[in-house]
Image (tube, rainbow, N blue to C red):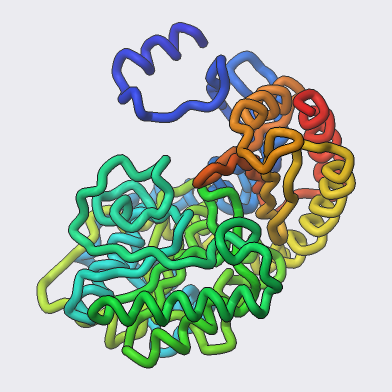
Length: 427
């Protein structure tokens, strides 16, 4: 393992992040578990950064990929592609967007990049609204709208980005307000911001902010924003890369918690739909999707083998009601963790929905972030056989819990017990 780590450092970028003091090589997985190169078994509560959505080595997906690979793996979008059309039909119907068109990419970054291209072309402006504490990917344009300086290595951008309040409920200038007043204050801030600039192309927002530590506004905030945006024709882009496909339990899409003013104009997705395969994409109304006046293709977006994986994975998800499982098992896990947190001075908040749970940490007796303890807890959980994630934004540190949606009650209890001990080791 040390040899592989040395080789990694020799040939890969210094900024390519690795977890753990002794980085882990995962060699195989099954269900909700993975194994490392030394034969150690772990309960996986992070799923390849929310990507292994249903289960590791899911037989239905493995079979679909194997059978497709035996026929043809790839032909590009220059040719008709039956699996791509079939998956696009299902996603268009599930999206809630009327007269929807779907374009497949290889990642969430590329999906958001495409959404920004569509919105700015359709609206003929390069000004974009984004949320503070947000994360939208690694490309030049996506970094330019990311409101989290820990993941934004340059201020150069093809876009003019203006940042809006509201993505973090329990911090910032409106944190002490009740939910109704919080929404009203954020809407007032949005109106004031729009009074100082030419009308932007779009607002892009994660219904629950992923990298930022699984933070979210009160339900209905983006619906209230949308009423204001519609007055000027500004589009709403829902970044569902982490929140889509039922992970939040209560809804299939995160935007549905804010759906009182209708669905978004553009929706981006990735991660979970491929269960590890490289699938991203954009859904938009036909008039928006078709606004480009030049030719385009996607060499690897929508390739047959990833579409076969996506179709099999989506079918499994729907047929086994994994959204309902996320609601039930996630609810139990959140309550179990809240009971533990009530006894620990370093846990500021347990938040989230379904199987998308954040644990915000602070230095005991203060409201300051505690990244050192976050790393300590991450290591302790790994030592005890549990893999989790971490994140956070401005002066925050959080642990991120996002298991595959097929998690059982027994596995949730096992993971919660390990987390309890890991938290107690730090506090």
